[in-house]
Length: 433
Image 1 (tube, rainbow, N blue to C red):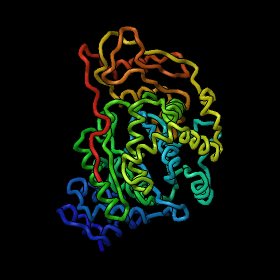
Image 2 (spheres, rainbow, N blue to C red):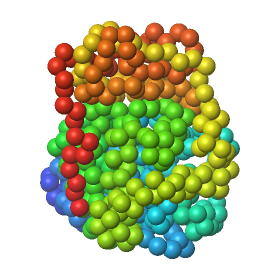
Image 3 (cartoon, rainbow, N blue to C red):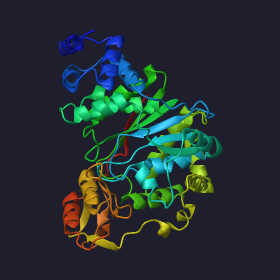
Image 4 (cartoon, one colour):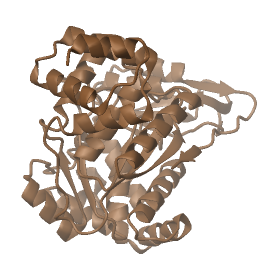
């Protein structure tokens, strides 16, 4: 078949057959289909969309473009969690040991961050000695022994997606729901998940800024998962302000420890209980979300969850003493307060701007080759709806440099104070399954 004919077919609104999609993905992966033709196809998909069958076929074609992870050696139903990203999103650090502590096996493949803060692996590497450079055999053995392990993403996992993502980034086709959904789901399926829980963010600090966009993406991903035999659930959660209080790698590890002890921020705790409940139900550990929630809360209250975190860290070379002695985590030289210039109530916190402020400190990567400073970041002391007095600290900047005028300016720009109390936005705005 000729690639140009397939481009024309999609351009004119036609539906691509499975073998035609396989031809496109295999040809693009091996280089026989050039960038300019795949660019044209991506633009045709951007304008014409894809049917549910096309989206599922595209996802599986990308899954089969490289290696897949076989988790059949791990007993139980393997449930993966994916977040579409945000600011201060510490859920994986809490969820992995929490759900493992009640019997849900967590075999997690995670990546590094590009943007506001590090990815899950960067955050975990704030724990001295922790590493993800383990082979597949050890990875599976750790999951079977401890119920949880995290490994770095394989370079040969969904290579078609990596190539296509890079192309979309420079051709104005990033914001295509079928292409976003197939990109995310192909990685989850190739990673060996039996079931998938999706945390789809919406709001200022999210990739999908509006609720309607987030709903469309969530529905698309859930449909793909269910069509290819993976029971999939999506939770739509708010990212109009940062999740939790900490933005920055070591700071988020400390916040995860607090949350596993039962003294973490209310919003982070609540979201982890909601996502964890779905994971437990899909794994068959609990019959209902209510039963699962009780199990998770009991694990936190009894200390079982925090002990599982210690076991997880130690098994991968990490210094588990950081759990009882957070001062062993990387610590910034300077703590600089951000005092409120007026009294009133916090009306809004621009999540994306706060993330950019953390990146100015070195908490995130501007480019793939940027070095992250694991110690730096920002800890919020106020959230939307909270009362504040003039001079009271809105946040603390953790920095390894004294001159942080640019960060202070960004923080004042990000936090708006009102004379009238504002109702905080709901944390979860919907679920799709």
